Image (cartoon, rainbow, N blue to C red; front, side):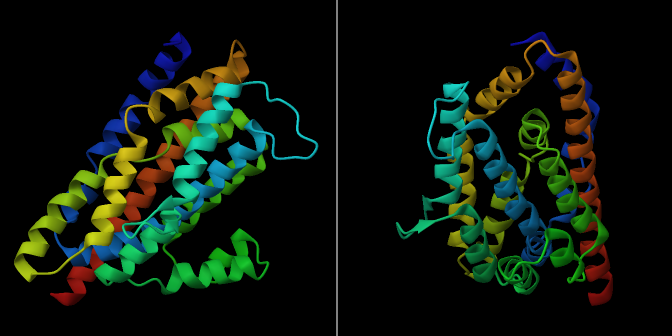
Length: 262
């Protein structure tokens, strides 16, 4: 692996450790907690697609007339992820994006989709992301997380977008969810099959291949440009800080909800 990637990962280690040991994971003790989590996390599921589509616009050729791209292996990687995220199949074999699968899982588990549906409706109607967010009564951490993603996209710098995409996403949640869902299904004789399917597909498609390929994408975009490597580190650090802040906000929501119910 490129020494610059190694140095980036070493520099990010404290933030990753802070994220992976966040108190939110111990806060997730019930299905009610998962509902609270999903009602905020769905905005991160949504903005992931915009990061991905921004990379597709930059790193594959989506214009006419078509011409070959500079890095075919990176283009293939991006197109594979787009296929898996934007037009996967759900548990019924129907073409569905992972975002839509997440919404279905929210509805099955009983989480509210009111905010995210209103948000999407406003986007479709032509509202800016900022205005659509402001129209909702979301925690400031959720709004800030999405704002950061779109400020990164607005730089039109593929290496910065790739940094947020590659280093700024979580990988701990699925295991936590599986434990809680299994216990709740046994206790309440309920089925959360849609959330289980979403998580399993998420793990299956990410696998062992996407991680190394995303690092290779960053290498190809930066090569020997020291300024770009500095940008990648700064963007990756910011992405993790906003993720930790999002976790802080959700943890506070869970605590305040439990306090009201006590």
